[in-house]
Amino acid sequence: MAMNNMNRFSSGEIEHGVGDGAKREPGIAPFVTKTYDMVEDPNTNSVICWSSSGSSFVISDHNRFSFELLPKYFKHTNMSSFVYQLNNYGFKKIGLQKWEYGHYWFQAGKKHLISNIKRRTKNLNARRDFNQENYFYGVGEEMRSQRDLNITLKSELEKLKERQDDMIKGIASLKEYLERSEAESRKFLCFLAKAVKQVVATKRGTKRDVEVRDVITSKRRAEDVTGSSKSSEKN
Image (cartoon, rainbow, N blue to C red; front, side, top):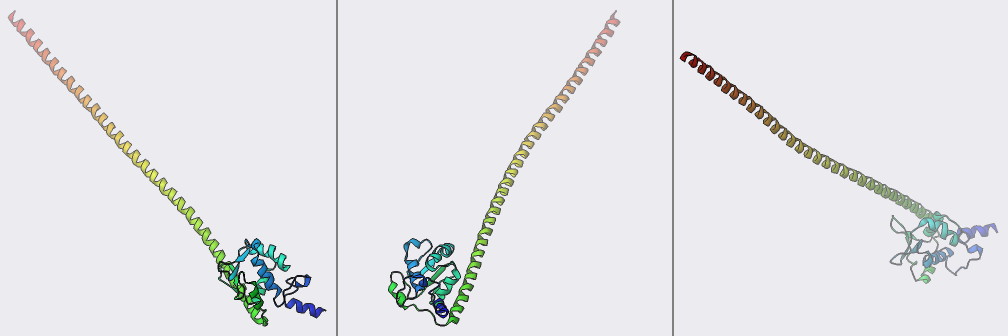
């Protein structure tokens, strides 16, 4: 009995639900059938769906895929286990930046072709592909982290640019204010200079008038003295 359970586990039956009464199509691995049904189901398109070419499928939300669809179809939440089984059946990852997998016999609207998909007999190749998948996943995570960092840096640079623009505008406003103040100061100084000049001119004119009056007064006095002297001589 224990040996039978071990054999069933190694073929994917217990892990993928065949042992609990799930319907199994003759000649087709349960894992492949369940995966096809999951991709084909339009209700799961927000999580997993066919690519535009229909020759591969894309997992657009691996968190929801792990915790919503895997328990429903495969009785577990282990994404690595699902990827491992994909490798066992010859699926290949397409690209590095998204979860996309393809197989020659796994195509949209052609379920009859999946009967050609067989489990690999050499675990060594499956393990190698699994390790490669983990490597690509790590690279993808690193690229996503770098992309997020680039976005953050770009945002910070934009903020710095905005601050720089504000500073430039502030400096321009200050320069304009200083130039206006300087122009007003020049006008005030010119006005002040004219006022001083007028005051000085006024003082000079007043002094000249006084001097003229003094001369006239002196002359009149001299004339009066001269007139008085002549009158005395006549008498």
